[in-house]
Structures are given as structure tokens and as C-alpha cells.
Length: 550
View 1 (cartoon, one colour):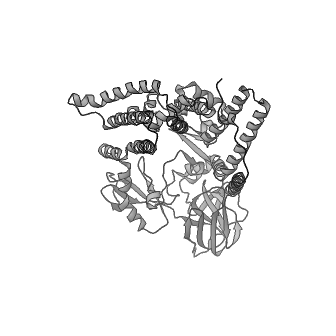
View 2 (cartoon, one colour):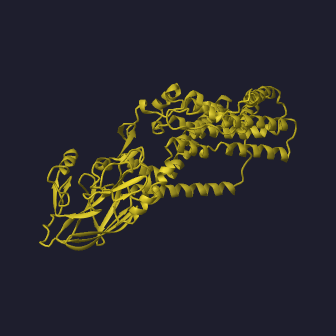
View 3 (cartoon, helix red, strand yellow):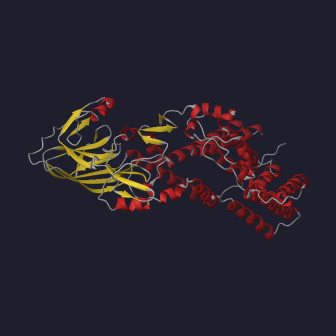
């Protein structure tokens, strides 16, 4: 969304500035630009509200990971942590992907869009430079490339300092997506020029030398009797030669269906040829770091865990733990992500309170007592794990969050019997009856809904091994009930003596308001689109499309 905003805002400003430079009515053009920008911004914010509002709520309650340190998610990321930049030699990937190699300080973004599309973009710039939007997208590409260099570029530092919220797009090299977007638009102009213009001598001379160099580079190892050149480099050189051949075929006057088919076929082949997944899988397997095989190796352990009585969670006790939750449906306490709720972060050292009944370790672990073992993994049962829900009849108040977390770890404290709260209860809890037949049975668990059957021997506090978070609503026997923060991060609900049905449902105001705004925005956009289609349109002013250089 940040990239979309940059493109829209910069395009509007560029258009208005160009109109002013061409002696148009400057106040009128800037007024039009401001109106267009306001309308786009309103529709964008309203349309994305279903995601933006819950995200804003979450960011105030979460940490962001920056390597070994954490930072509140709402705090501007310091410039020294604005990583994942493209290194200069990464731009070789525009033509020969394999020459770029690992051309990034973090996540690798390959800018390759294909040899023939790149040629078409060059043709579009050369032959259609008088068009307003050709100049705009050329400038956008240049700016995106400079920004992708991260701290190596002054533009990156300048925009970080003056552009609100740009720091949220932490990975500078992701802006190569804008480069590919701009090249794709310019390639469309290039297609139009290729099949309508017939003056190609300067480009042809340059391309002749490029093709000759590519042919020599492709055949040289075989002439020397050494066929050990990288197959990916050979493929790139071959695609350059094929592009040269199709280009020469078209510029010699062949502009019919057959020529268009050749262009389309070459582009599709080019874009599908550099699928490195098979080669990467072989390389990863050889290096012993094949994450897919590692994830699939959990199948036996997952089958064993699914045979156990639920509910429970699993703790993966090793580094770089794979995400078995999504693939196998096993609830776990770990996962990969750049943010984490602050309350949950406090509880990660209390796996017992998080209902982590089982721990998974590699098969090489020396700890005795595994209840399951296969060639890859061992499973251990944690006898001290708390259930998913339990009842207590005593509560202590500690408003200081840090001291509260210290108190729950104090020797002799049994959280099965006492709960720690940040504020006093409105109702007093009853001491359990002599028989103390308290029971809490987990009946339903979904992402947005929980149901627990409770039998309490006197008024009690139901503690759920679920992280406290705004937006959850609770009922006890159909009546609304307050959800309390218990033991530093968990949920608690007061229940009466006897049998009760406790229901919790996730229904945040941020989501409901965002949903309403998004639906309104989409409905408005649909209405305007239909009206536009059925309204007689006046011819577009030529100056809106093409501005002559002179």
C-alpha cells in the first residue's frame, strides 16, 4: 500500500507540474491534482480500513523484532536497522539473473522481468519519450532503483527523513517491485513502437555487437573443450540471441500475426525458464538445510499428537522451528514473525501456563523419557503444564506489571489456586466447598470463538490459557461478562456457583468499523464505475496523454 501511495501521489504531482510547465492554467491544474489525490486517498484508506484499523490496534500492543532487539511496533525504526538493501551488482539481474547472485543484504529480490520485455522497455523510452507517462515511469524506475540501494543511496536516507511512515516498508530492496512495474508499462509502449515504427539503425548496431558478444560467450567454453559453464548463464545468453533474432525479424517488416506470436511465445518462455525451485531443492538437500523436507518429517510426530486428548499446545525446543501449526493443525507456542503481542512475549517463558503439554526436540536430543520417537524427532510430555482452563477461588492484586510477573514465579505460589490481577474484583470470590468439585471442560475452540462448560463449588474465577486481547466479548449463561487480565497476560471471567456455560467471541470494533468503511468504499467505487460506463465521454485531450518536448 505504501508503494501504491507513492506511485499515485508522484504521478499526480508530476502531471500537474508538467501541465504548469506547458503554460496551462496552473491554479486549475493543481486544484484538479489536489482533488484527484484527495479522492484516491479517501478511497484507498476506506477500502483498506478492514485491514488498517485492526493493524493499527495491534501495533499499539506489539513488539517489532529488529534482529536481536525489540521495539514497540508504533515506534519509528532507527535508520541503522533499515536493512535488506540491494547491492549495486544486483542490477545485473535485470538481464542475467544468475550474475546477480546473492545481491542483497537480506531478503533477495530478483529484478529480472525477461530479456525481450527489457528490450521493449528500452524501445518504449527511445521511441515514445515525448509521451508524458513514458517520462514519468522512466523517472519512477530510476528513483526505485536508487532507493533499493538502501544506505548506499542518498535518496534512501532523504526519503526516510521526510516521508511519513515510509520506515514501515523496512526492506529497501522490495522497491524493485516498482522497477518491474514501471518496466512492464514501458514495455507496452515499446510493443506499440516496435510494430509501427521502422527506423531502428542505432539500436540495431548496438544489438549486433551484444548478440556477437553473447554468441562468443556461449560457444567459447565448448570451443576450448570445456562445457562447464553455468547452465543458467548459458540460458541467459541463449535468450539474448533469441531476442535478437525475433527483433531483427520484426524490424525487417514482419509485423503480422506470426511475428506477434513469436514475440508472445518468447516472452512466455523467458518468464517460465528461470524457475529455480527444482535446482534449489537439490542444492538445499545436498547442504542439509532443506526446510520443506524438514517440515514434512513432522508427519509421524503430528499423527501421534493428534491421537492425544485435546486441547493442548506444543513447544518446539530448538532454533528455526518450522511452522507445523498451519500444515498439520497442531497448536504450538512458537512461530516465525517480525512482530509479537507484548503480553504474549511476557508469557513465552511460562510454557506451562500456555498449556504446552508436549515438547518436541530433534532425535539427537539426549534427554530421557521421550513418549514418542522417530528418525527425526522426539516428543516429551510436560507433567507441569496447566490445562486450557481452570478455576481459582482466590485473587491477589498487583498493579505493577513487572512485580506481578515476579510474583507469579515466587516459590510456593500455586496458580491453580490463586490468580494475580491488576485491579480488585467487583465481586468477592467464594471459598471452595469441602468437596471442591470444580470442573472446566473445553467444549469448542475456533479462531474467533471459545466455549467452556464450568461447574464451580462457589463463585470462582475461570482462568483461560488464552492471551488477553481487546475485542473479545464474553457471556456467562447468556449474560454479558467482563474479561479480566489474569496472571499478567491471560484471560479471566468470574463465574457463579454451580453449572455455567461460558462463551467468548472475537468481535473487535476496529474490524467492524473497518468492514463498514471498506464496503462503503467498494460500493462507491462500483457505483462510479457503472456511472462512468453509461455516461457519454468526451474525447480525451491529447495533451493529457502526450506532451511535446518542444
